[in-house]
Image (cartoon, rainbow, N blue to C red; front, top):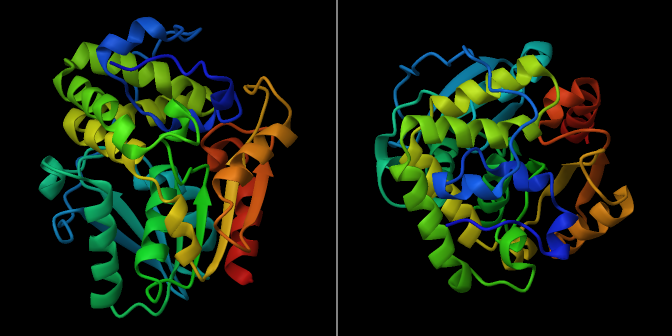
Length: 320
């Protein structure tokens, strides 16, 4: 069963906690109800009919130029990056990843076992097999953690990385920075089981409760909500558990490429931007030389809430 994120240490990262796309039905009683009802007919993503790569993801390649790999977050669609791709497909060749089991994509090999680390290994294989020469990698949320893991474990595979509103250790939101994966594993496993066993009504309620705080505009809320509804309960639950028990902080020192971290701050935070920045900086202390950039005001989907700012930051990241 999940528990409220009430520790003072978690307050500084409240928006990043919105990495969740669903929670076990049992945890709903601990969550405030959204101030508006869920959309009655949210747009649902089309079933992804592209072939699965190594059983872990599909990919759509768009544009021409230097290669850029885009990895969306938990229960999210590759359309997370649609505006970026539409604006710059004449300058870059984008490899739009869609993780199996998320947003209408068949679960494939993600139907059982770990999700995040095997998907990262599959992306590394894709880079090698496609003869991509040190592509840039941009990931949002879970995708940002995947980008960090890829750069740490396959340092010769990538040229630069950007993590967008991601944490190297999501478990810190539940047990503080001193928590360990071993201590958090029983809770994470319980949450994964709860998600897998939730019925459609409970899943929808949980998805909306956690989607509403992720993004500001109602149309974007409805779109992200539809992605969650079309995601596998089991895959989403296990991927979320993976994030809780994966502590990448010691591995950050292995990353030798240029790294940029964008993180959101806004009126949803009860503390000022300096305290949010200090918290994020502490978690990324081992990522030497990284650029940590606050984007304010914004919720979790920075590319939706601040599209022009997001575009500028990405273009700066890719140009330098």
